[in-house]
Structure formats: C-alpha cells, structure tokens
Image (tube, rainbow, N blue to C red; front, side):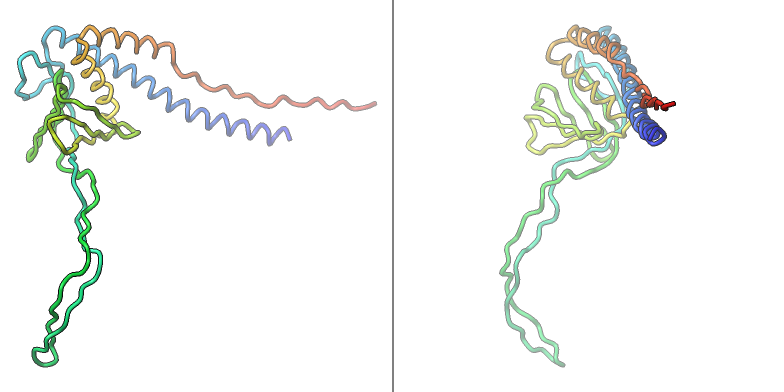
Length: 231
C-alpha cells in the first residue's frame, strides 16, 4: 500500500506543480504589465507618448500603447431558400425539356457572425482605440463607449459604441491580448476619473499582486504505518 499511496501523492503533486507554474507565470507577467502601464502613464502625465506612432492625434490626446491586431465586424452567413419548387416542362428538341416554374420555399437570412478582415496597427490612446489597416480604418471613442466583451483567453474583443449600430472589434495574438486588456481598463479609468485615479489604481493592484504571489505546492507523502510484531 505504501508504494501505491506514494505514487498517487507524487502524481497529484506533479499536477499541482503544473498549475502552480502557470499561475506563477501569469502573476509575474501581470507585474511586468502593470509596471509597463505605470511607465506609460508617467509619460502621459508629462504630455509625452509612450510609443512612436504616425497617428493624427487630437489636442491633449496621448498614445499609450501600440500593437498588431485583426479587425472584425458584425456580418451574416449567406442566406438560403428552404422549401421546394414546382412547375412544368416544355419539350424543345431531341428529348431536351426546359422546366418552367416558381420557387415555393422561404428565404432564410444568414446567421449573425463576426467577419474577420485584415491585420493592421492597433493604437490605444487616452481618448480612443484605433485600427489602421491598408483597406480599413476604425476608431472606438471613449466618449461614445457603451461597453466591451472579451474572450476567456483575453485575445478577442468586441467593442460597443453609441455612434455605430454594428458591433466590431479586434483579435490579438496571445502575447498581446492580456497586455491590451489591462491597458484598456486603465485608459478607460483615466478618461472617466483622471490620471491621478490611474496611479492610485495601479498602486493598489501592484500592492495586491505583491501579497498574492502563488505558493508552490508541497509534496506530502502518506505516513508509513508501523507494524508491531509480537514476540
């Protein structure tokens, strides 16, 4: 029993270690991200862009982050007819017949989907999110912001703005999605509450992260049983 119990405990420990390593990686990544965000807003407080860009900026607008992403917009799959046709055929020549009739079915509109388009430059500023591609340009202004949704892995985003009926958004690479997510939250915080609120928020987040470092699991083997032998 001791051998199999030890083996079971070691397997459980191995699984727990794998989960810990993922959690610790994300924890370290978040510390790096929030320090990067702090650096960007410290430059913004001085009126300086955090990254180089070719964006035509509005008065007082500061560029916080720049990356690559794929634009997508609301669309539909192709429609189709559901039903059958009826009619009669007219003989022509050599046994060939031409069918005359009418469609009796119903046209069913396509299903709503997000249609993925080109990859381009994504720019996050203190005022908006911008997409600049070869064929498409798009902006989502914070003053028109109604909300956003993100995929569970933080790579795909849909933005809702009041001046546009159709939803649209951006798909990021995994290494950029998490960074964009946290940058966007603080950019919205800055637009609503001001830059001092951002520094206060970042201080709180970094303090919590320092206190919440994931702890490595400890391997605990079952205690060996002592067998008393009668003399």
